[in-house]
Length: 192
Image 1: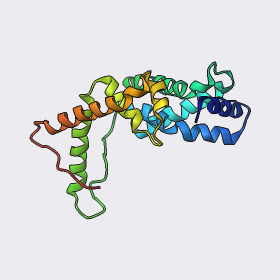
Image 2: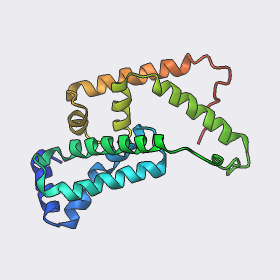
Image 3: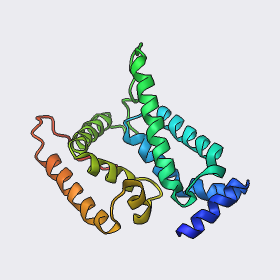
């Protein structure tokens, strides 16, 4: 969607056009979710952040100074809401047991969920070892639907031409960290 089209869609949504609002939600929902999940929030807290971010946009849609930067506005709002949820969570003292996920699997191999968790933990560890800009870039690029490079450039304040090469370097660095992980319980590759 071009900047001119985006400004027009935002204007229509501000005027109450449900179709225009749905276009905005479809265009930026993945971005908002990726920002919320990028802060390590669980699904319920991330859903709260996403819902609150869209609510804030609905409340402020008519008064946006720069309607063609609605994606950056949503990303900033989602970041602020995520930080608010994290601060709130630090004040709460957890009680009870963490029940985790079901230990059975669909194919009758009870070890698969454990192996998947170990693999996911190793990937997460490699990801967390990346520089902050790499983590932010990969999170945004993993959102569904994938944002355009112009949107990524706007959200991360990065030249469009550097996104692809930086992405490749970040993935290479993560792959190297994953492959050189010296943990004795290295996860086994499990097909999903």
